[in-house]
Length: 265
Image 1 (cartoon, rainbow, N blue to C red):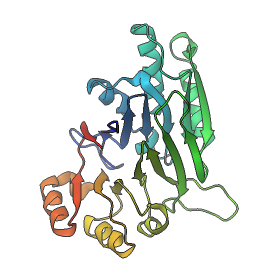
Image 2: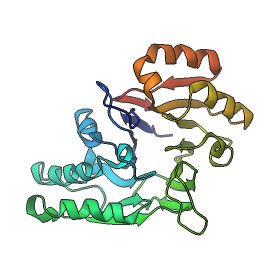
Image 3: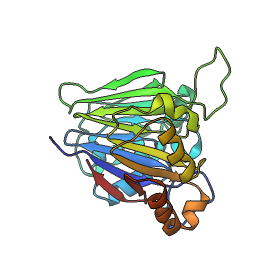
């Protein structure tokens, strides 16, 4: 079974800036593709300096349109095009799919890019897609086996009869199940986290470590590996305390993420 790389490009929530921390973004890399989960500021800059090939990008999945999750999208798309020009290489995909809950936000980014170099004319296509519950993306014949499913959560206020605007993602890739929380309410985890989860990435920007661990036990969710992402001030100010807190609260494999960290599944 081939390796899956999980690159942590940004681990900070939408609080004030912290040294060596950027807003939330995770890139999932296989041999045949690169898939982005949120695109906080500096995500493409960090990825490039880590040696990640941005031209492998096939899909970008935005959980919700707060700036700490989407603020780097324009620069990511811009850098992909820039590399095709500077390095005279083609993107791996003929079309890059960008999934955003508010299509207006995607269009605003594209309107901004239209006034950059060469009017942002690319030798590949972009496809802006809305995020809705269910199957969002399924890899083609030239990709590793991958499916991305969206599940709404209650992070943002929702009125009956209107579209959901905040989502978590389940990724089924090459026989593994990965869960990415985005921003979420703890009660959502009962329905959104798969029971047989290989990797669970859960935000700590709105919850404490103890609260999350208690909630996972309550709902009988025991992933093979637990990653805490999107950190709030308490963890950002004292990551060493957070590491000790994890050991006292969770018996399984669990870790606090930092920027530029790569894990291999």
